[in-house]
Picture 1 (tube, each protein chain N blue to C red):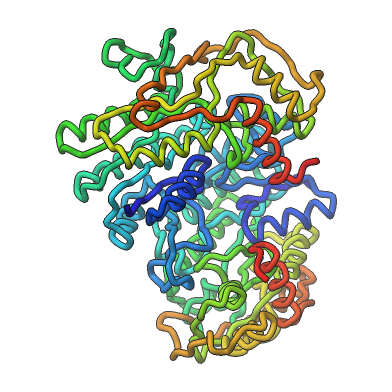
Picture 2 (picture 1 turned 180 degrees about the vertical axis):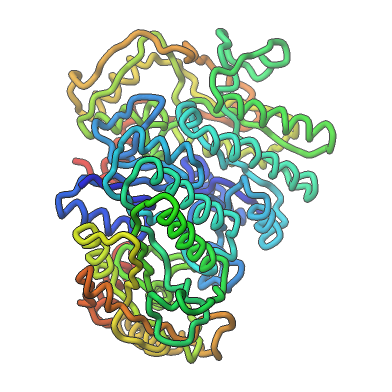
Length: 317
Length: 317
């Protein structure tokens, strides 16, 4: 299959490209940075067969040009997005432009060109839902999203739903729950797993908010499931992709202390955080059934592998 | 001195930061990507003393916030820009927003906060000028810039000039001529030195347009000169920063073949390129006089050091 992955330099996108190529697909990608293997448009590229294009998804012309130059594509994995709740609060102009205008551009191109779309949503769309997170919750309940990032992700799902109904576009939505692993470069806006581990390996203190619980999915597991989608593409479906076991943030922090060999004195405990979902128990049974989703790495094994990668990438001892 | 460098992850910016810190200055920087040492705004940063902020200079709020959080600054080196002629043609939306709207934001902040500005312009502002490029050419002659990148750089110079006249802001403009060296990561839009060398080391063919001549300045020389500006800041001045020796593109290509040990068969020769300045002889005597500008690396030495760096960075043998 010929596939475009937007956000191809991101944590999920880069892992997904590797897996899709391993399976023999012809994969091209784009992201908003220059790269050695990129197309030049006004001039001839130095590289004979570029597989990457620099493009800002919020700029229609830059995205459309990829389809003209390198399309048609059978599938588009649309990973390009501003990621994370606090990143979205700090960079809301970029968030809304990239996530909402950017995704609308992709949908318009889909309506014209007819590719199948796999769109990346987030567990954040479940907002303050206090019970088991099943895909159908929003069919029966009105959910209030707790931050702008969550809102953009929910808006995207409705944009796609409307396009499916109005224009018969074919799309699948995946809602990723807390995902971590090698390939997730540290910033203060990344997953709690990444943040704690980076702090521990550097000897920086971190804060644990008590009373919150999450699942953790190892990136490689997520990537395998995502790559399976095109083997059983069911348009209109939405899938939770998450871990099987709920753990408290205290437990995660303890695992970090263990795999990093860090001092418990680094950890500061506080009462639970405002406007943050207490627990996110996830029903991923539909992804298990349709997409052969597996959780092959327990938290400690996954965190140990992530620590190894992180030590290497940041030259930490 | 307390200094902000915009575009701090770029080729010139990153080298400049290193040199300014070596000289004991307190340097903060920004660029448009996430980095481990970055500020978080809505949440507490994990790192105790961040020295970097993610910001898109075309978004006023994101830039203003840096001055509020980390200012006041004595000097701002404004390196942030979309770089290069063909990059500008391929990404003109981003080019005009970043270079022109972005620089206007910096000027507005300067008018309010009173820091001294060092603005990065380009030899491209000389357009089709056929003779020696002296800073005063535009006082006597009407120049036609040959591409949008050149136009944004010339617009910036006029914006700064108008602000100096209207609001008594204090600024220095530097016009960089072809600069190369370790720290310049390859993309098809980078300097001709970088492109040829990357092709040679990878065994890719490249095209030499006959009849063009340039100077080449080694990045470290440029960086030293730039760091010297604050020791002798003369508001209103414009400086050419360029090499002392004009060489043809054929000669550069021959040096590349030599230092890379590549086959001459990789080189294809063509007649001269349209809308490209034939020769860019530069008068850098003012920078030599006021800023102690030196060209300490001859082309072959500089290219040999760059090749070493490039082999290492791209894991080439």
